[in-house]
Length: 291
Ligand code: NAP
Image 1 (cartoon, helix red, strand yellow):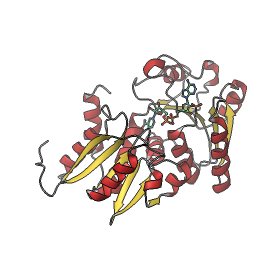
Image 2 (cartoon, protein in one colour; image 1 turned 90 degrees about the vertical axis):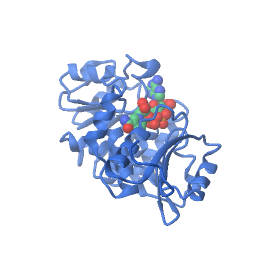
Image 3 (cartoon, protein in one colour; image 1 turned 30 degrees about the vertical axis):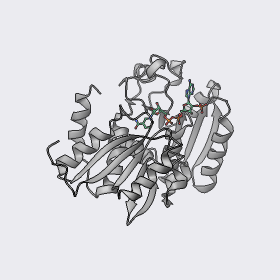
Image 4 (cartoon, helix red, strand yellow; image 1 turned 180 degrees about the vertical axis):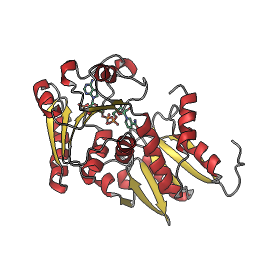
């Protein structure tokens, strides 16, 4: 680090568990340093049991702001003073902005995803999107997409104990916005085929395809991929999941989740500092990490 840590240096941080491998410290410290901002960003292990104490520390230490990751994105909400519309609708916070001691929870995942599409020249406004998985990342993307003019979202999730919760989330977004959100059983491949016809985007938002599930895909029938659909995967390691490789082989345009990671971070950085993140430098740094 080139800039010296001094008595004036402001602290920013990440709360979640595990956080050791997070790219957020790299992204934000490089940006502070490049722009000459007297601040430092550290990762702190926090769980739903300790997130309340962590938020007390944000206030007591007068931290500049923070990110929140799994498993604390929902658990942090009761400790915050205010929520943005997207954070409220999605029930999840990934960024805390401190304004005159008031802590406001935002969720920048949806903005990151939509900016990634915009950057690639893809607009889902007035169109349908299909999303596989109805977890935390999906809820932020759905809330942001619904507020940004996407007309229809078809969610597919496995029918387990979380299905009912996803169903009421879909109903709430449909009620509160002009976007119709419907939840389907992931096992219903004929419904998936029907929903994909005429959709602008297929987004995969589960962990299938990474870690121990590398080489697996939720779309086993390649004929479901129509070349008109842009296929996105939130996973960025590996850079090309089996789902993306299959979609590409079927003639679809594909995008992985690395730009979304960068752009959701850039939005948090802007909320904290009012400055644009130096994106190409951060992209280069990601590249040096083998991403
Ligand atoms: P999450 O809240 O834990 O949700 C996971 C979702 O995946 C749930 O809908 C879950 O279904 C489903 N799922 C898990 N295993 C499955 C399986 N074997 N078969 C079918 N569905 C399965 O996680 P999240 O925060 O939404 O993250 C989802 C993915 O996005 C992860 O890979 C994460 O790394 C990635 N992500 C990327 C970015 C980025 O910036 N690129 C940002 C956030 C997340 P159930 O509800 O039925 O369990």
